[in-house]
Image (cartoon, rainbow, N blue to C red):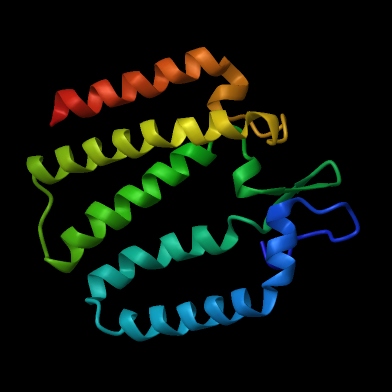
Amino acid sequence: RLIGIDFTESLSLRHQWIQKNKKNLWFLTIASGITALFFSFRLSESSLLLLFPLAVIVLLYPVPIYFRRGKAYRIREIPGIKIFLIAFIWTLVSVGLLAAEKQLFCSVDLVLLFVQRFFFVFAITIPFDIRDLKYDNKAIKTIPIVFGEDKAKMVSFFSLAIYEITV
């Protein structure tokens, strides 16, 4: 967000705040990166192996990664992938990282926890996509854009039902 803001347009209040606090935001970003690097040395090798592909996805998320018909596309612009990536990454970090760090092997309980967390995060992410309907580019095929607001809510409720059934 710090790099990609076009300041030639009229700025929203959020963009005005970012512009006003840009030096502080850069400082926090760099300090957070250094802190993350410091603590990464305390993680096990299996945790680092799990985090590496996630870090690549997160770092490439806002960057154009493929070109088609003269247009650059970012990962988030691949139709239908955004919400699944969010749910998958949150699930891997909150379940997979813990399992890797504690050296828990694949078990039915661990798979069930993974499924539960995925459907929970998936369900709670949909309202944010609904909120962003008026701001999102219609080319980004989110669930609310494809199915409409009411059906998107039903998908969210269905995901919560799966979560509840598996608890």
